[in-house]
Figure 1 (cartoon, one colour):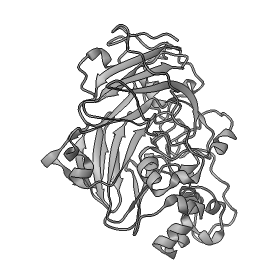
Figure 2 (figure 1 turned 120 degrees about the horizontal axis):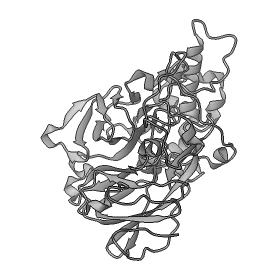
Figure 3 (figure 1 turned 120 degrees about the vertical axis):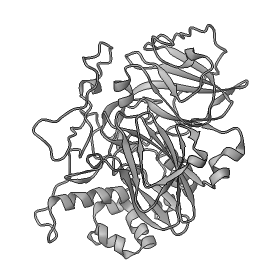
Figure 4 (figure 1 turned 90 degrees about the vertical axis):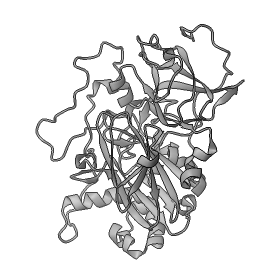
Length: 451
C-alpha cells in the first residue's frame, strides 16, 4: 500500500484497524445513557443477523406522488462521468425518493371509512414504534394504544423498532494519540446499506463502511491527522468542510490542492482544528455521486474554553446530529428514511441540541411540531445576540445550524422536513420524518425493549 503526500514524509502513524468498532447486537446498547448520548447522537447499531440474512439487490425505485408517467429527475453531471466509478449503484440514476415500493398487503376489509392509504400509513407508524408502542402507551395513556391499534396484536408489537434493525452509522471514533497529534484512521469502502429494513440493501459508499461515517470529535486547537485508505475501485479525496486551514494544500480538492487518492493508496491530512463548531467531512471528488452514495460524516470541534460549550452556556443535556441527504437512496436523515429514523428521546425539563447538517443538493425546512427551536449557531459560528426562535428552519446544502429545544411538555411530537413530497406519499410517511418523544421522567429505552 503506497502513501502519496506532496508535503514529503509524514511522522509514523501507529498501526491500527481502520474499521470502526462493530455495532453491538445487544439491546443493552440501548440503555438510556447509551441511547441518548451515543445512539441518538450517532445512531443505533444494526441487528447483525437481520442484515446478514439479506442478499444484495438492485436499488429501490423512487417516485414523487402522485406518480406521473415520466418521472422528472434532478440534474447531476451534464455528461456521463469518465471516472472508473462504474459500480452497480452508479448505474442507477439518483432520484429523490417519495414512497418506496414493497408496501405490505392490504386486507380485503378495511375499517369503516378507511382507504388503503390509511392502512399503509398506520403500518409505517407501527414499524417506527415496534415493541415500544405498549410501554409508551403506559407512559402517555391508552389513547396511543388505540391510535396504533394495539388490540390487534399485530406482529410489530413483538419486534424491535425499525431504527434498531438497521446500522445507523455515525458512531464516535476515538482517535489514537501520536505525540501531540490526534490521529483518525479511516477507510473509504463500498458497502451494502439499508435505508429501511424492509427494502433490499443498496450498493453505497461509506467511511469505515458506515453511512454517515464515524463521528470525529476534537477540541479547538488540537492537532489532527486524518488518514484515509482508499478501498474503492475509483479515485477520491476528502474535504473537511468549515475548517480554517493554515496550509491550503490540506483542503482536500483533487487537482487543486492534491492529486486524487487512487485505489489502494493511503493519504493523510494534517491541520489544526479551528474554528470550533459543527463541521463536516465528505468526498470532494466526483462528489455528486460519492457524497450522494454516502461519503459524508460529522466533524465536531468543541470550544477550548469550557464556558463556551453548549452545556455551560445553555444547559444542554444531550445532542443529536442530523445529516440530511437527498439523492441516491432518497430523502434521508443520517442515511435512513422513516420509519428507520432515530427518534429524539428526552425527559421533561431537558434541553436538547440538534445539529442540522445538509449534505444534499436541496434545501430542507425542518419543522418541529409543538415547539420553537432556539437557533444559536450557523455554520459553527455562534449567533450571540442574533440568536432567534422558529419552528421551521431552512437548511441549505452545505449549511450547519445548531438549535436548542426546551423540552417543557410531554408527548410524541412529529419532526420533519416541510417540503411535503419529501415526507408523505400514498402509503404514508417516509423519508425525512422522525419524532421528538418527551417523557415525564427519564426513560431507559433498553429496559423497555427487553420488557
